Image (cartoon, rainbow, N blue to C red; front, side, top):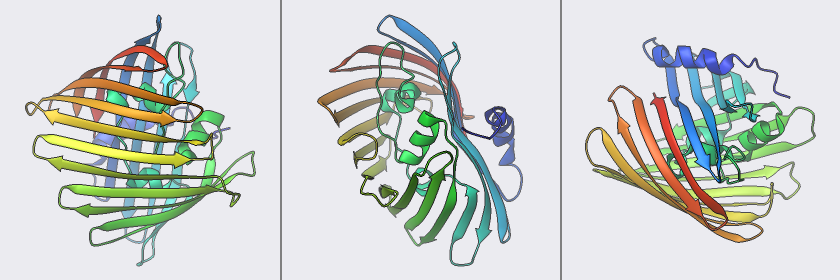
Length: 299
């Protein structure tokens, strides 16, 4: 099981918004409180996806979490990161319990703005889930197993790339990852591949994201045989009506035991300081209408 204290997400909530003011500290992430309703059931979900990194010369540290808590005595899906950072001069090594290289480089948008769909199994009354860039966090959260390992990352011009290896406590499973991102103007092309214990089970993802003025669009295709056997395609787009107001839509196709289509719309109001309000509606072939209302903070 995860050995990091449950108070870690709360600690990051307090530290991350202020850490950017300190020299050598880098923070990124999002905290969100989401109300979800569907199929006659409802739940409140708190999501903490935060990373704090300190780099001071050749040495540093990273501390983070990707956790989802159903506040009405529902499930808790937790993944924690804590690693020492070493700058070797030809790239950075993270040693301990690092974030996977795919999760560090690739950011797939939430479907219709709903963190509950990202989490999987947190949707009230039904099981609706979409793939994430990496199975490392999925296994850690779903099976409550802490991962330990090593990550290498580097950059060269417009390219960022890296590799990582992760072993889970209480199991013999080991995941190996390769990931990269190429930036061309306002376009990012991203991809990753991972293998489980060199036994043939793998997952892979390729995607493209483009930001053009008021429009943002992204498309990601993933294939995996580590947990099930199937493919997922997700298309997302946003349009900024003003500096504060954004509307968007998402379409996804899942093909595991059967083909399924999901679609949704979302709207968000930003307050200019990272805080926001949002709401969304989603539906699909094998699900009833899902609705959400959220308040959150991005940094």
